[in-house]
Image 1 (cartoon, rainbow, N blue to C red):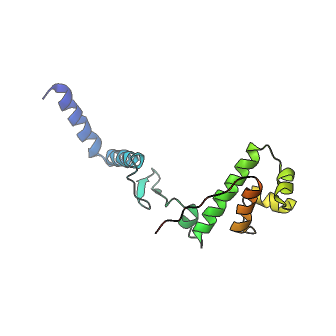
Image 2: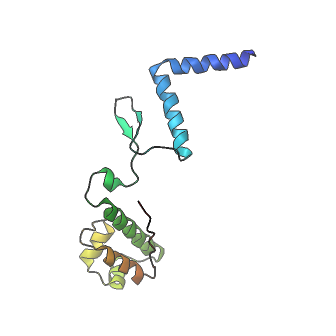
Image 3: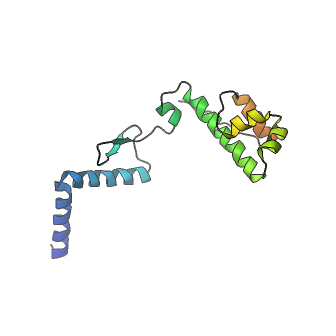
Length: 142
């Protein structure tokens, strides 16, 4: 073997011989797996210097927080995000949007602030429809 190859192997062995080196190598491997789409949800990704463990989420923050009906919360959040995006694209202020959607000012304020408990899924879908958009849903087997 050439001197460069031997030096490279020696440096890799050194990096993996300490606890910090092993963590660094593990974190790099997990980052690569995540970038390649081969990560596992709910698995501890790494531990910070103060001992805090960082865990990969499930993709639904409401499920991760243990809220009831997390799928409905996520769907409402996505619909509200789209309504806000459309409002920005159309340069609508809250008053204009409230008039177009036939919402009260307090409902419009709650919607923009993400307080969606008082809104049903149907009401949010109809709001998007009133703005000229038709949401489409995909049903998949669990």
